[in-house]
Amino acid sequence: MTVPAGDDLLIADVTIGRSGAMATIGLNRVKALNALTTEMRETIAAAIPTFSRDPNLYIVVLRSSSPKAFSAGGDVRELVAWGRTDPARAKAAFAAEYRLNWMLECFSKPTVSLADGLVMGSGVGISIYNTHRVAGEGYRFAMPETAIGLFPDVGVAHVLARLPGEVGTYLGLTGRTIGRAEAFRLGLVTHCIAGREFAGIETQLADAQPVDRLLDGLHQDPGTGELAMHRGLIADCFAADTVEAITERLARSAASGHEFAAGILTDLAKRSPTSLKITLRHLRSARTLDLRSVLAVDYRLACHCLDGHDFAEGVRAALIDKDNLPVWSPARITDVTQGMVDAHFAALRPGEELELPTRSEMQAARV
Ligand code: QUE
Image 1: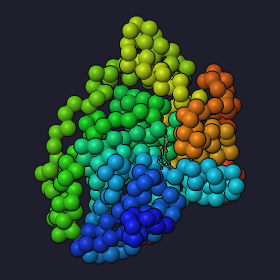
Image 2 (image 1 turned 120 degrees about the vertical axis):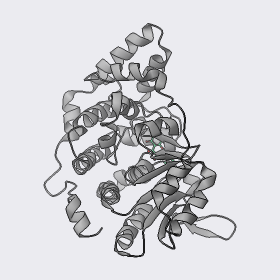
Image 3 (image 1 turned 90 degrees about the horizontal axis):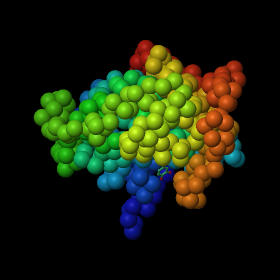
C-alpha cells in the first residue's frame, strides 16, 4: 500500500483528496511509473460511489506525481505471479480492473485527467473514459500489450475500432507510441495544455470554475500529428482481413523503398504472433459491440491469456529478466491456427463470465 517517498515520509500509492468542489485521485507509485496494482484500483473503485453521492462535489481530477508517467500500465508482474500460484486471484484482478473501467465510463460527474508523460495500457483504461483528457507536452499514448503476449484490453478495442483510417488497428497491433498532437487529432485527448498549468487548473476547479471555459482557454494547438505523412499507407495496409495479409501489404511497400513500412514490419516481428491474431479479431468485432460487451470479451481473452504461454513469457522477457528476448509459442504467425484464435474467444464456464450492470443500472445505483 505504501512506498517510502523520502527519508521518513510515507505516501500511499493512490491518494484521494478533497479541495472545495473538487476531489482528486493522485497516483504516487512513482518508482513503478504508476503501474496500477490491484490495490490501487480498489482504492479508486471505493472512492467513486462516494463522489457520486456527494452533492457538493462537482468535479474529479486524476493526476500523477511522477513527471515521467501518468500511468505506464498495470502491475502485470503481479498478475503473472498469481496466474501461476492462484489463477482465480489473477482472473478476479482482471475482472476488477474491467469493472473499474466501466464504473468510470458510467460515472456522471465531469472527470479530468491531467497527463504529462506516459499513458499506456491500464493507464489508458482509467483516463480514456474521463470527460476531459488533458495532455501536457510530454504526453505519450500506447497500447503495447502485444509486446507482452496480451492484447489491448481495458475496453480500448472499442475506442481503437472507431478511429479513422485504420490507425487504431496500427496502434493496437504494433503497440507503438504516439504523442499528444496525434492523440488530439484522434480524439484520445480533449485538450493540449502545458504541464506547468496543471496546478493552476486544480486551484480553479476547486473554486468551482466552469471546466470547459477554463480548459478551452488554456488549450494550445499541438501542431501536426506524427502519423500525418503515413496515413495512406496505414489505411491501405491495416485494412487487410488477416495479420498475414497486413504483413504482405507492408512487405510490398517496404520492398518498394517505403522505410516506415519496413519499420512496422520489424516491430510486428517482435510481437507475440498469437497476440497479433487475437488483437486483430478483437478490434474488428469491437466495431459493432458496445463498450460493456467489449469489456466482457476482454475478460474472456484475459482468462485465456492467463492459461496460455505467451503472457507469462512476454512479462518475463520485458519486465522480469529484461532480456527482451521472448520465446513465443507458436513462434510464427502462420503457425497460429484459427482453432487457437477461436479458443481465446470461447465462452467461459457458466457463472464465470464478466457480467457488468447496464449503464442505467449503474446510474440508478449512483455508482
Ligand atoms: C508492454 C506492456 C507493458 C509494459 C511493457 C510493454 C505493460 C505494463 C508495463 C509496466 C511498466 C512499468 C511497471 C510495470 C509494468 O510495461 O502493460 O510493473 O513498473 O504494465 O512492452 O503492455
